[in-house]
Length: 169
Image (cartoon, rainbow, N blue to C red; front, side):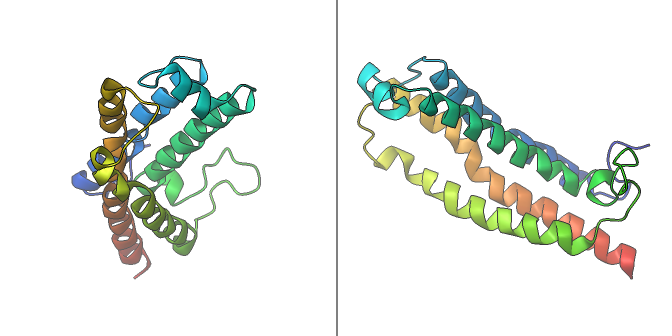
């Protein structure tokens, strides 16, 4: 069986795989913070961000895990498991996934990512108390890939939408 759906355009495969990777730098950075490394914050800044109890680190790790799950779900738009439930899934295996069941969450995610990450274009114009100058540069560079998430996901979603439309007509 092919790793991607056979009629997925090459550009959509590239966009889907790239979209799946854009959250990785910032997620790894947050995990480093959760482990107690300042990674661009002053000691006070890290304390203010993470706090003194276990919930700060738990939150940072959970946020990273959720971001990576969301990023990996973009691959459903180019892989067979975004069209047909894998056979190993009990009761549902082999079932065709309704196109709207994929498109509605995908377009919603595009909108959310646009709202969340476009503001990062202004990262260097905003003061960041509690961060060192090098940290501000580091964090800016680690978060900049997130700006590309919405357009990459939109491109992949358009390819999915076109492909599924031609399959049903």
